[in-house]
Image 1 (tube, rainbow, N blue to C red):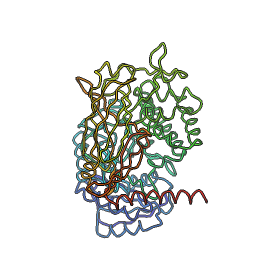
Image 2 (tube, rainbow, N blue to C red):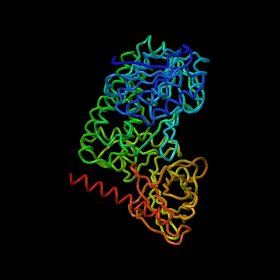
Image 3 (tube, one colour):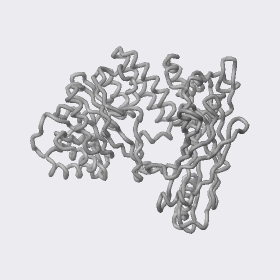
Length: 546
């Protein structure tokens, strides 16, 4: 290792938790991360901050903190590692406490996080303890729960095989590890410049058959800064090399399970790739350029071709259909339909083809839509088209597509409840119900929307609202989905006469094809939106001239 170390020189307790904070050129944020760990109280025996040879003021920030914080130890690398794995490994080597936990320099630990994890680990004697994490969108502050199906209640699992769904959570930072478990089994991250190193580390940990405790408490806040000059790896998906790196990391994760003779976990890891990773990138594929699409398609087909049929078949119904479409076609096709199918929630848009075996993807691509008849009504991948027509009185028009007779069979939808949910977090501010009537191939309807009232609920400044819909289909829970944006309704309109004098309304289509609406109350807000578009256009023109 190329390391030097520094600390306050104050002895630290061997019990408790060592929080390992890794940092590289993050002087503005690392202090907040370290303080969030130190503020956890006596559960944190020490914070080990590993500076990966930063060239900004990161080292100075850490040194200053160490002069007043006896629990902070600073480890300095004299050569940059090129990735996140090596500094984390350095932190494990430097840690002295019974347990370790990882924290990135641009994230924070919420109050009580370490205590909740440590209490469960000591009560149950588990090698790994895990809790909830959220992705916090900044600067707005909206929290999006990471892997929302997991960690809803406390549990103890004797091995990862008892809860293979945990493989969907590849993060290393929302987990507490017993240090002797890591050192005795030589569990480490891939060194050097390795993207998605946490995929491999998590697989290595689970391949070593730990007992696992689950706590429902929030234990990690993952900050998402989409406007940052250098976005995180999880957001840097515009380069096909990111997808290639993800496949490489996933391959090593599967190899870790196989090397430990945990064949069931290796298969579950591949199924998770179909359920999650494939859909995450596929929903954005339609907006990429032709070169990216061709490369992505080739890489994906080659990798999926190595899967066992049972590993694909075990994936959820919409995801496995998408995987089979990719496998069945040599060149990219049906990208809009596939992006809708990969959305969350999934939408299967027309055309709807059938063969002797039942529903299939297309007349010229006999990929069976198996399991469609077994899906509960609330999970049906229904498609609801929508157009928001702005004016003094906004009108939302809907078109619900029948799905091989499944909607009619579950109770023809008599209405649709549409919620307007603020993008930056919080409860829906407006819910309207559109009555539906039978139409060719499904149902249609419309409902007035008070856009001025919606803007008033959001306050001043530019607002973004996402739209969600639930179909009222007789007894039981009807399908819930997002609205599919129709091009005919994507027209920016300045609405006069509102309480703000003017209200700029901009319906738009998200990357996954869903309808959202941007509202800019007041003349200043309207000019701000238009000015922002002009500035982005100017940057685009300049970049093309270079």
